[in-house]
Length: 291
Image (spheres, rainbow, N blue to C red):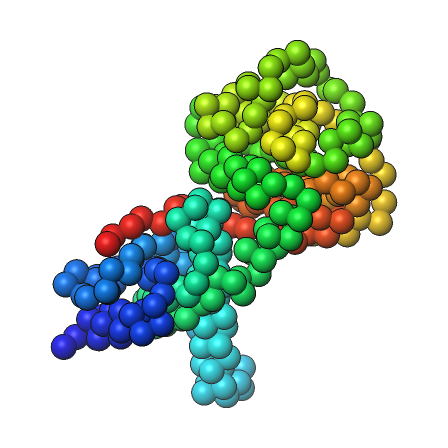
């Protein structure tokens, strides 16, 4: 029996015994002919780098080659775990996963890892549930889905960024002003409801405008193209992030709103609550279900 099949059968056995919600595979490992007991298998994006990319020639700098390799393996394992957490969180947002155990199989050029991951302990999912204390879960889910779509498809072939300020909309409107005429002014709630997928194309279109979307806790868009009048002093965010991120973090400090930002470059989705970045998620391509 070859190495790949042993790994696949071992992962399937662990999944059956733990009654896992899914098996998530990063790599080219085949589950054809493997009995999973009805547990679905998803293929997720591969990690961009493997341990072999990071190995540094030893001996020239006096480092112990065994210790160096051990450190690299530890970093590889941590990276694999983070990759699975990110992928699982994305599938949770997309509604493919709800709760339970995930068995991950991460294949790189130099190593294979089987990881047992509890969705209830996923830090990204826990952070999203924190936001649901202030806004409806379905509203948070819809905005995250739209944000993923913006990252993955852009608009007319161009990458775009955006920001959504959700909840405490009256206070947010008091602390902001229009950069342009509000494209949602005077429209019926039917056309402003972020929960209605028929409105998502227009949201993506207006994402090209400067400014932010203001959305109430029920998912009704109050404005687009809005400029936030906030004092960004003492806002601690990652260096290199632009004004959209700074103002989003600041408005989450000054109100009880949740701020979601989409980076035009890098495809990173960030969520701010009480001026703190509680989610930083690299947008991977959605998983493909095999079984």
